[in-house]
Length: 270
Length: 262
Image (cartoon, rainbow over all chains, first blue to last red; front, side, top):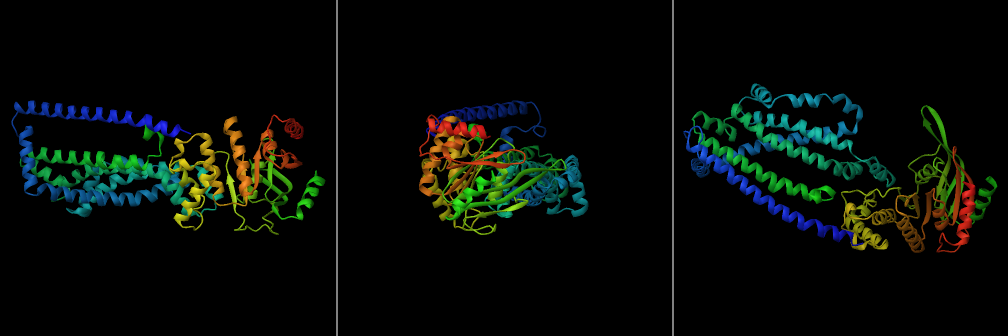
């Protein structure tokens, strides 16, 4: 009867020690990186490789004049809209394709084909169709994220345990409850990892879309800075993006995932 | 064979019955050919009785259980439940079902797994949780309400599954080789547990098994089934007081008798 408590006692301290170790390693890694950056910048002109101090100044400038938040905000908004649309389309389609073998077999080639189309091509199509507007970036994010979500949800739907469906049948559960109580919880981990992937990809391709099809946003500012040979600003924008993505990923998505899927044995052991 | 089932059914007709099977037959399509799984099954189970369906694999005992539960429809014959005159499904005659495996949803805690059985109905959440809580206490797992299935041992998971099949307060509990995947020691414990709960709740129990000792230890009556097509060969009354133990000579002689029948 004491198995439960014993197991917990074993797992927790080990993982805490590991986490501390990991943190130290990460700090050392960043320090080494900044060091190498600084050393390399000493021997080349600042418009080729600006040093950390110069980038820091550029960063402070865009923070002070409000450029950072407004552009980060607009880019984030476009990514979010494209991503939400992708999830709204991807989730039901993935479920239908996974639950209905015939539909799945029929549409199977579509996803790899969609995945092979480069985001740059979507961006060019988007400019032809939507011109310089928000819709261009949103479309590119949507077209990149949607196949990723469909693929994952599809895969998740196929793992739904037939025994659990039988259990629900014995309990005379109506179909919609089987959907929300058996299908959804089974699919959720797959949807979540697909969504995480899609969100990351969405960010990256949104910049591509913004550099060619927008007059605002981080991507647009990046190109502008490059055109003006303000390499320090290019670095500053890049840095903010990296920091933001890392914060979202490690500060929000991973803890959320750990909490949602705490019933998984291997997740606990990590 | 027919004479014996007839005799037992007239004996219980005076009292109300929990389950009455009249001429149940069932075939499944097997590679184009119909395969007769059950043939003319007649069986009456008295209220509060514990009846074992004993047979080798292929004798259709699990199919018979599924027919009683209503998930499989028979080709011929009818299933009458809780004294009803026809085979209509009765809301008030709740049936609990326990599978061969514990079949717990891994993403739900123990109490939420028990609650699951009530979620088909329209009880409010607080009421469901309250009942799940009480039923988990009944199976002696009150301390493990918030544990996830992976944190529980095989025996504890089996108790959660038992609680889930009892939480609807069934008048009939159907069990499909429920403890066959447990080790011998835990299985013996679960047998005692089931009998203790039966003393308290007095629900009718029909269980499927291929384990002769299990049948003798648990059942008031054992229906021995013969395979292909599945028929009831004989119904044996186990006229022994409980608790029963496989080491008792009376139990052993019943085991011998049933083994000869299979």
